[in-house]
Image (tube, rainbow, N blue to C red; front, side, top):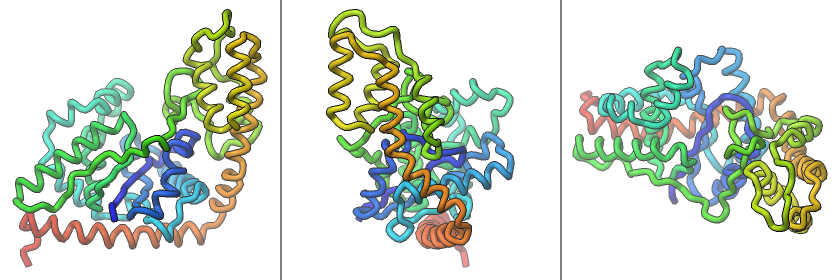
Length: 329
């Protein structure tokens, strides 16, 4: 059975892009593969969150993972920092990761531009920590977005480099897992591309109905089509993409026909879109709140997940230490 690993930073709520883009697929995949899902709280430290925010965010993301359908009995769900073997492997992989190749990563260059006052070593070695996350379980599949493909390639490079340097095939080379036709790309509400936390263009699983409606009604559109079958602006196309995910096919066809014959009223489209989004997310919101307030259950989940994750991690680190000559006695 293949091993799959996926993580998400502990920096706020999950949004529609997380849910429709990956989580719905993960709920099915956890029954077919050996799945590890983790909350990347160490990665979030590169932006220096306050301790109280870090604790709260871990609890939020864990609750939202569970409410979305991830089953701790079917998969391994854990907090990154609760598996110290990850940090050990991170330190060891840093010994064979080179400054030049890390400085060339697109994510590092982007962070240097966005936060020039906080260019810490963690930002530079972020891909090495991500590699440790993957390689600690010797994962073969890693679902990644386009912006993370370069990091996955670094994990492959480090796996090859370790195996060659120490003459033993400890690590498989992880491959990007593609959901194929099931992969849904959720656009943002600002017409600029995908939905994301840092872009501030998302609808979150915890949003109430009023908030959803307010966000959708503010979504970017245009002044409307001026002739039949005219091309859509990016913002309008994004709304139709969202509609195709959350609404019934006849609803999508109805508004598409209105657009093509220049009779569409974007206000009506947005009201329908907000209503259909709420139909999907409000039951999840209710489960999130129930789970979030169940401290004993959350504690049980993270302790159980940490133990399962550490069993896998210990086995890998035994191979790593033996290969490197660290286990002398």
